[in-house]
Length: 330
Image 1 (cartoon, one colour):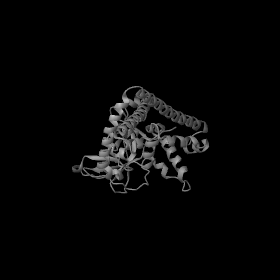
Image 2 (tube, rainbow, N blue to C red):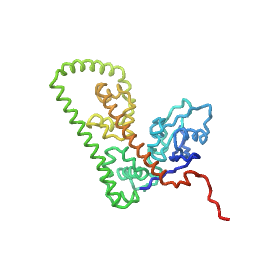
Image 3 (cartoon, rainbow, N blue to C red):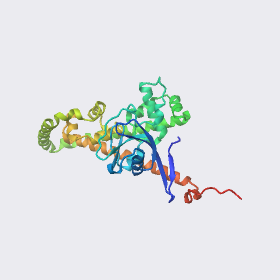
Image 4 (cartoon, one colour):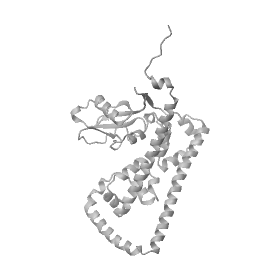
């Protein structure tokens, strides 16, 4: 598949991958398209394009969809092209602005949808366009999104991706393999948990467990008293909370965006919402954080391999003298 995007060559011959982005100010509908190779460059362009006074720096960049602060270059590289960023000056606070119907993570191409597309049909097309933009986005998809693309008729998916049916069939096989790997990881984790439970029953750990339960009960009571008024402020959707309660190894079921929300949630508040003890909640949050880190590392590895491939494809003369114009014979 072709992957859109730009690449520039610096004066030192270093290849810079440019990511197209969309910039806007808080509570503003004016949108500006820019391309940047890193967060520092994007911040600089935000100050110039959005006319942010230098005295109001530093500028913080957040995702327009949910206000997630983006301050890591690796995470920035993992975001899809045309992601929308809100530039916050100094101590300005992010406020949700429904300028795009909540589709800031989707490519601009997803706005050119047939008006007859609704519901599930529109959803799988939006997910497919993310893969068309960057195939490595497979790593970031939830199990629900993976299964949805697998079940789409091959001819429909091929038309959406502008690829042959044979290529799309291979893609769906790859999606099934990713889904199977997550299921195998979940089953392995379940077996390990059962094994550890059996060891606990054979030893003298039960008595210690009772003592720890008493302590945890006191902690839960304290949490109930201290954060009962904050339950309504939890940022997680009911779908995420249901997955955390009911799914074994929920970190393998959630998308990368959901994983990030779980890891950022306050453990005590999340424990109350799930009716768990704090220790169990923190364990699940750690598992989500590890899974998110693994996916981001995989994305970074794919981007690195892509950059190496692009560097090898450049001619030696182009790499050494990127700005030298071709001379007319005289």
